[in-house]
Length: 198
Image (cartoon, rainbow, N blue to C red; front, side, top):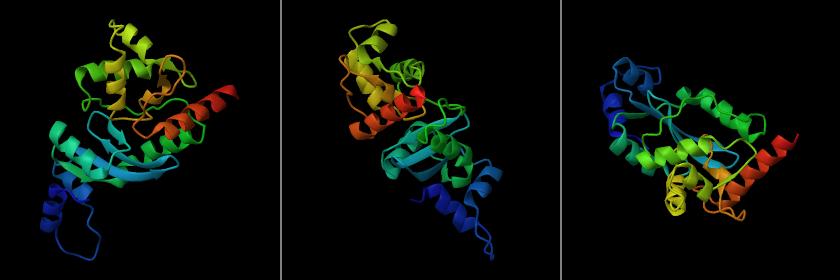
C-alpha cells in the first residue's frame, strides 16, 4: 500500500537510474513522522510502525487498518521504510526462536487510550514465562471489577508481542482472547514456558 505522502514524494523526486529511496527523501525533508513496514514472522504477517518515541505498532491487523489508525492518531506523514526495522525484526526473530526474553526497543503506546496504556504498562510487568489474570491486572490498577475493560484494552494492544498481552489469561487458566487468535497466543505461551524451563 502506498500512502499519499509517498505518492507525492515519488512524483517530485528527480528521475534518474537509481531506485528512489522515498523514506530517505522524507527524512531529509523532515517529513517522516512514522516509518512502517510489513514483515512475515513465524507466527504470521505483522505490520510494524515506529514513531520518534518508539515502536508504535506491532499488529496482526491488515496494513490499511494500521495505516488509517496511525494517520488518525499519530500523523498522516507515514512512509514505508523497511530498513528502519532491522533491529526490531532481529529482536522479534530472537524472541520467536526462544533466544530472547526481553525487548530493548522503546515503545510508544499513544494508539491506546489512557486506561489502555495503564493496562498495557501493567502487562509489561508480567515476567517472561509467567501469566497473570485479567482480574489481577484490574486489581493492580485499583479497580477489581474492571476485568472486562482490562480484556478489551488488551485486545486493542497496538504493540502485540513486545507488550506481552498474551501473558494475561482468564481466571482458571482459560486463554481468553488475543488479536492474533488463540492458537498464536498458545504458541507464544508455550514458547516462553519451554524457554524458561531450560
